[in-house]
Length: 296
Image 1 (cartoon, rainbow, N blue to C red):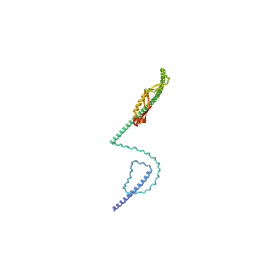
Image 2 (image 1 turned 45 degrees about the vertical axis):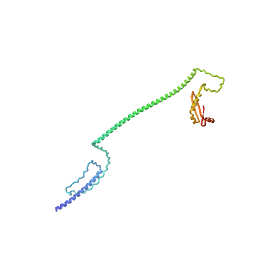
Image 3 (image 1 turned 135 degrees about the horizontal axis):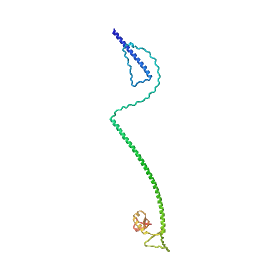
Image 4 (image 1 turned 45 degrees about the horizontal axis):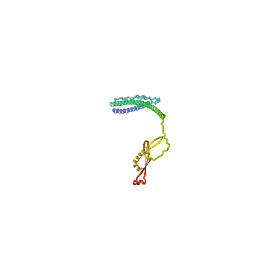
C-alpha cells in the first residue's frame, strides 16, 4: 500500500512541477515583453558584437509546495517619458584595409613591360615635341628669309623698272640727237661740197622722127637723170618664158607674168591664146592650132 501511495504522490508531484514551470515561463515572457517595451522607448547603448545570453531556467530540487505560484497584481504602467530627439551622429566611413598579396612573376613582368612601353612613349612624345618646336623655329626663320628676299626682289624690280624707263628716255633722246646730227651733217655736206656745174643742152629745132631699121636703144629721163632701158633683153627673157609655158597655154586661155629685174627694170606682160584665122588654118594644113598674143 505504501508503494502505491508513493507512486501516486510521485505522479501528482510531476504534474505540479510542470505547471509551475509553465507558469514561470509565462511570467518570464510577460516580463521580457514589458522590458522590451521600456527598452524601445529609452536610448540603449548596445555593445557591438555582444551576444545575447539566454535565460537559463533554474532547477529546483526542493519541495514543490514551497514554490507555489503567487498571483501578483500587475503594476500600473509607468508614464512614458518624451525623449528629446538626438542628433544623428555623422557617419565617418572607415578606411578600407588594403591586403597586400605577393603578385606573381608573370604579373610583375607584364607591369615592367608596360612601364617600359610607357617610358618609350614618353620619350617619343618628348622627342616629337622637341622636333615640332625645332620645326617651328626653322619655319619662322625660313619665313623671315622669304619675306626678306621678296622685299629685296620688289626693291630690285622697282629699281630695274626705273632704270628701264631712264634707258627708254635716253634712247628717245639719242634718236632725236642722231636725227639732228644727221640733218646738221647733211647741211654741212651741202655747204662744204662744191656745186657741180650743170651742163645744159640747148637746141632750137624740133627733132624729126624717122624709121630706123637698125637696133634701137631706149633711154628714160626721170628726175633730171637719164638711164638705159633694156627692152631687148627683157623681151628675150619674155620669149623664153612663153616658150617654156606653151603646154600651159594649151590648157588655159590667159597668163599674167613678170620678167626681170634687169638693170633695175622689170616688165609685166599678159599672154593670151587667140584663135587662128581661116587663112592661117589653111596655111597650117588644118584646124586645132592657136596663136599667142603678148601685151606689155
